[in-house]
Image (cartoon, rainbow, N blue to C red; front, side, top):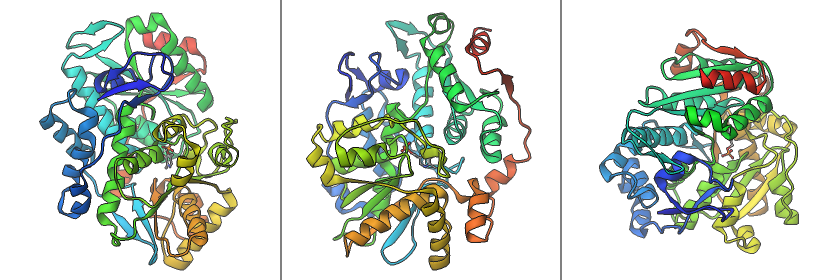
Length: 442
Ligand SMILES: *Cc1c(COP(=O)(O)O)cnc(C)c1O
């Protein structure tokens, strides 16, 4: 598979190069030259296939020629080594629980797949950029800014991956205690920089580093954010796993996806375009409503992000939306047939957490609650439909909101319980680029 840049000003590349460079030189996003069709036999008999086989067959056309089949199977198997259950909430609504991975967020799937692909390319001495071959033995530095979930998933995914050093910038005092432990206690090839500033400061510092020629001469820098194809594409897997567990084959599900940067739902739309039966997609947003507004007005107007309870979705300029337009060849009519976008307030979110617990004894996290309510609204307007919402984070990550609106405190899973006793190790840093540069040059 070859990938072109959505800005169309950069050369096409293969999967390996798209993974290594992250973003295209013209600042566009890489997109596959053609969308493969999944074998309809796989769809008809999906319950007969293991998750590993399904994932392998879905990703194979995107990766073939860059990674040998046997190695790809190994990567896929390690990526999905935790349960992804479809849990009934009531007779017509199901929760696809994506929070059973090591950092309790759906980002584990993409981060684990990407880290293993990059680790493989580094090991093969195939880190090639700007015509420079990096011989084997070269290290790659993954530099990433996080407001919470991304950092943990990336740290965990890359932990112990040979040849890859990870440097995570996070705003001091602005991530939750669980999230901070996930970032700062691993050690080895994972370093945490505790920036005495905001998330925007962290992001700006990272951007400056990528643009700094001197730093790039000294280190082979790459990013691990959600625009990387190796993080984006494997997110298709769990839409297939959801269908495998879906009880009504004659009546495909409506799927509601809590959305921020729109990478996750974009993977779902790609899976549908490849032949996965899905009745309709719902982009469930909080008050950061750039896409819901677009679906009304056909005008894409980025805004300043507004802080909400579902903070992983506080995105004012969702970068993956351009890929969604690409999937539908920029036809608004086709897009509308496949996608509805809904905006939900914090008050509606907490009312939903409370209602779902009272009615069905199901504990939602704030992100899942946005997905659940958006689905319920859609089903209200389309009687007879049945659906799935994606539960993207474990409720324990938001214990205060959950306790306040359900009266129960979610149980802490063993994986989290253990890290809470580990020692935090960080390098404190002023929110200025010079400090980061000194660190990277030393
Ligand atoms: C990142 C994240 C989202 C948003 O996913 P996108 O792919 O950016 O749309 C939703 N929920 C949680 C818990 C997240 O961590």
